[in-house]
Amino acid sequence: MHHFRGKLLQGVETCLDPANVYIQYHTTASDHGQGWYGYLVVASETDVEPGATYTLALADGRSGQLRIDAVSSDASGEVRATFLGEGSLG
Image (cartoon, rainbow, N blue to C red; front, side, top):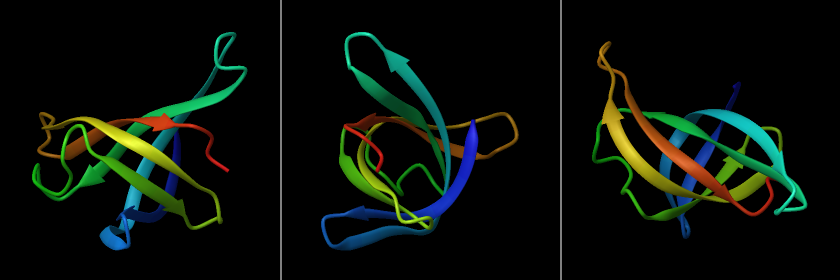
């Protein structure tokens, strides 16, 4: 996974700034391009809503839409929001 920083937006409202995001890229024959998925590190399980769509704006200028799948904390207490990218990250 690749670590990036940026902002997470819902409409014009900033939800996370800075957003620490970990992205994995994959290519499948059916999508004819590059897909992406991963997780965001969030402060609490209420920072983002599962099923909701957000815009991820990375510090390097790329952006894309993502849908939150689940939010949970791991054994160390870190809260992660897993997501699936919708469309390209460009």
